[in-house]
Length: 295
Image 1 (cartoon, rainbow, N blue to C red):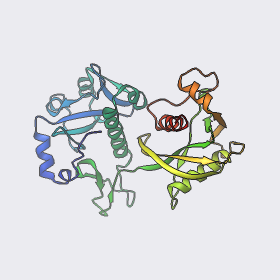
Image 2 (image 1 turned 135 degrees about the vertical axis):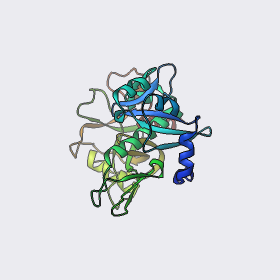
Image 3 (image 1 turned 60 degrees about the horizontal axis):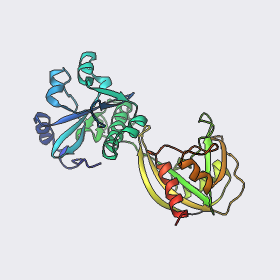
Image 4 (image 1 turned 135 degrees about the horizontal axis):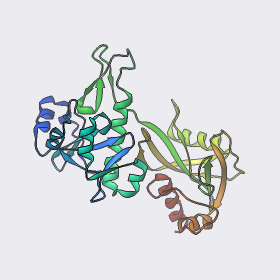
């Protein structure tokens, strides 16, 4: 995502007010159902702030995403708008579920959609101070909320999740949750516990979910996952093998798949295995492992 998050400017109230008055400033939109996509191109639908005013949708508490080519870009919650304003502003666009939007949008727009959805979701669910229960005020143009009663400052929540590709020779450990399609398998994942390193979380989650012990976890890549507020931290790890068995009630099945099975699934030619979608870090980790095997 190429957006400048305007970390310094957003703390300056006159600067934010100037951006709100700037006719070049624009807004993008999200609801609980998804993000507003332009019907003409694979991009978030953008409206100038003048369009919002004309539709009767004035921005009382601005939530600034950042600067896009020097122009301010604000976030607007469609669910908070009057019905007529929502109808006017969604004309020419479609509200698409975030997961589906991720498959339609180019990477830069997909990153912006994830940022937009995660930030607005946090504001919807953190309107009151968890210390004293007073209604919290938006601060730093949406980057925090401040309690006017006890003075506590609260920041958007991000939940760290480790997700790992575990291999033993030319075999890959994959699991399937109940409710998934019968052939759908993915790499294992789980939340990081308090006081735990990421490497410890990798080893613990694999052990709990499969009974398999891992060695030498190494970081590969990350991906924001705003469902509602996770950050997926991708790892690779080795194992000496062992017979995997679902262990903590999260997985319906867990097993080793050979390289040939994974390659067939990547070509969509397997009758036994269906891999995660290409937009996910799970798929990236699998492809990263395959590329290393083929060297």
